[in-house]
Length: 151
Image (cartoon, rainbow, N blue to C red; front, side, top):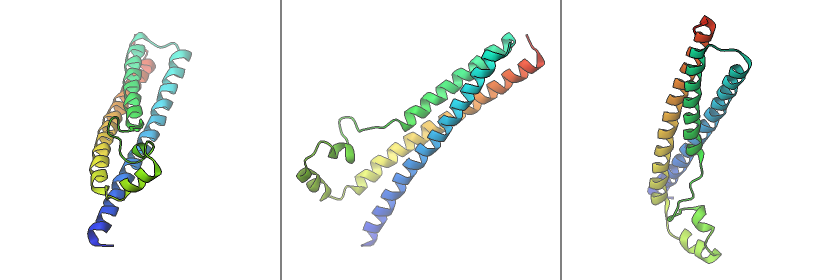
């Protein structure tokens, strides 16, 4: 293998690994967000809370729901729309057409496309983390209000 060929293979593998890493992080954060929402629901339905705590807690839940939405969009499969690449495109091809398409080295184009997808996913993940932190802070404030008995 030549150096450019080895470099392309390494870059292609790296960007695919980053996509998998992003999906894993988003999945873990989605589970954490779901646990926070379930906990907030349990507390809100089993304990009489002051109005201020309910209002702040509801805002925290709304922010967590926005974070969950972003996380779901992050891990949502994208089959390429009108211009699929990789396996979605292959699903519509005959075996001979697949062989023909694989005769070309599409790694540079795949690296560019996958890198753009990874950057979008990382951006959504970053925003979801920020929202999760904000939602958690609001839930902590609601708990403090409830503990203080503020009305």
